[in-house]
Image (cartoon, rainbow, N blue to C red; front, top):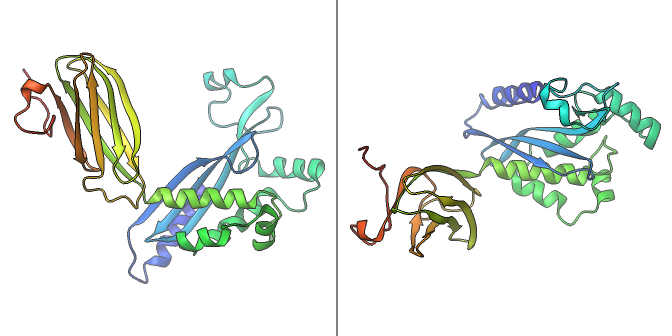
Amino acid sequence: MKKFVALLLAALLLCTTAAYAEVKIGQVEYAAHGTSCFAVMTVALDGDTIVAAHINEFQFLDAASAEGVPNSSESFGKNFPEGKVLASKVVNNGMYSTNMVNKAGATMPLGVGYKAIEAFATGKTIAELEAAIADKTKDEMVDAVSSCTLVDTLGYLQGLLAAAKAANNQTGYYTVYNKTGETVKELSLTINATGEKTVVAMDVPADAVKVIAFTVSGDVDPHHALTLAFTTESGYTAAMETLGVETAPVTLLAAEAMTGATPISFSAPKTE
């Protein structure tokens, strides 16, 4: 992470000589390489252009030779497989690269491959990176990225693309007050543009409060983007089809408490 912060600071310094949009950070966890580890992909986005990228992967490694993640020797590590620690491949680049040479005949350190992939993505727009990897095979992408021999180069670039897109994500935060007078059995949010429904809460007691964070992609118009729907234990069902991606209190109303056509109020209930 320190290396990525340094990259980001360098990118910001480069941007100071010209007008630039707000730099946004996108980060995703991604299965870029096999089924025994996971990657954390991080991208800094200036407008639609990737100005910095960072790859790290985490895997259970030999506890005798690897440096584990923080708290590996404390209660966090008690459920690790015997003789193993959860470890960063970046932190353990030397040890891991040696294993790659001895066990798989690798010709360059893991970190060198990571840096080559990060450099390939940096400077490209989201659309350019997407086009560069579209319909490519694993072998074609290894050939396309100079100074990189990692067989899953394509997977790493797909992860960085996902992180770049995540930088544009929009998140709404809703403090939901259940004032229906009964348990809400299901509360859902549906993205109107796609019809994708997500159940965000179940069995919410009367007078309970739930804080919900809901994320949509950056290409969704945030105005009137969502439909909020709920069903109570008595079978009362209501919906509001014009909820925006925003930060707002949302009070679910009983049918008899409605003062208009909307089954919710955008204000917190008065304290009694």
